[in-house]
Image (cartoon, rainbow, N blue to C red; front, side):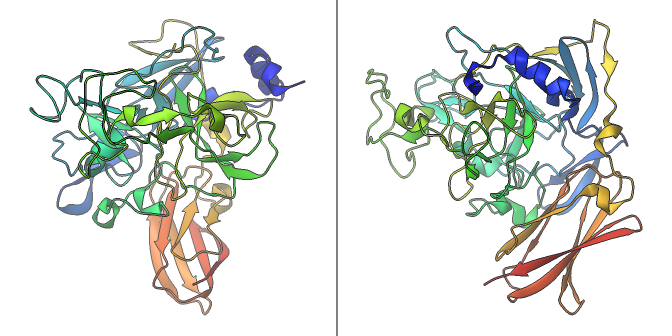
Length: 453
């Protein structure tokens, strides 16, 4: 049977029948030990401890719905926001209601909107491409008044481009306290081409590390209930073809003036293409290429596809956090400009039906055994940096050390409770064999790495 002919109801039954917890229940990073958020203040590279619990506080489910309680605060360090944004990440104290079985929209696709359009597995919000600023807004325009406002829906500024200076190391920032990502939630300093230096003074982890050799992890769920994955996946929808980078089917238009849409429709003129307003500065600078979308490793108009993933062996529709060949974020970034499914995720004041509380201890929360953390080291061989990604959460600090072949300690760092990532800058080291030591409690695991120059 073709994957495309499977119904979503069948997918749900196929997953649960194999005793696998439905990912929309089991994938969330729950905080069971009171881990608190931390943030940087401008000019101070020592993080400040906050009195707000990080990640997801609870997951509860009924026969049809899943309820995610979160403050919207990550375990990785937030801030600072160097564009003058006066806000800091603050507790949202929110409950989000997700469907157990999402549904395809067979009618006119629903546009993404400003504000939340999804939730990452650590409870942090996902926004779409926009920042609420357009070229011709009478009171809050790019040309005239202060940035902000609702825009006029003609030439809409791309937040990933226009607000880059305001993103922290983890590629996120707050809007009225609501901390959110518009894009791939991996730290700037781990991209192959680093386009922001904020991590130099204010290092942070991000949600995951891109690994081009493995299927990317499940990162969250959108407001139509379908899952979000990182940048790399199986080439073919049936799970074959090896691991490749999933590519956006949106490309920049070949224009020098901004007087029409990609459809040819004439609109209010925007600024001519220039150094100040380069192609890609506005959402309308892009066009969708249906020819590209017909290629297996290119995505559809919603930035997703129907395919097999590790968490959905029978297949599901899913979105991808797209990046270019240098791992810089690629439009439309995660979702958009329309949803594939029926937008039915809501923020609720309370739970009004009988629910079961999901116990996250079955996911292997670590309390002092490095083997349970299942650390992955990559790239290996490496040249510029080495990343360490834990596949389970820890309730204590994890010490990560880098040794040369003679046992001399070269560098040391820590992964704090609730986080999963550490990395070493290896650009100044000689080529050769080295060892990574992961210390959890009284247990240690060592892994060999090779540096090439």
